[in-house]
Length: 114
Image (cartoon, rainbow, N blue to C red):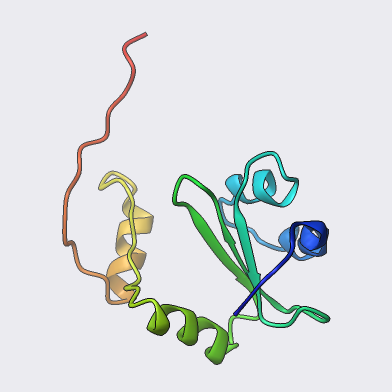
């Protein structure tokens, strides 16, 4: 995993267009609207991308079969994958269970009184 220089963030614009899930925070990093971090598997010809937003959100996309990229970073940093969603988001909750995630903590969701 190699940190990409800010000047090269534009390399992610086209690959990000192929991502279908919710990733609205990622363009804010890539377009340099917020200060985030981008990691790639190869500086010259990146195929796997990891975008980290300063608020803690992250997106891993591109070549999902790149085991060395996917595993090395998590193993080196002792990261454990998590899945976070509202319990009322039934499809997401069921998918997490199918993938082997188990509830570890329940946190309240707050709304602003308007």
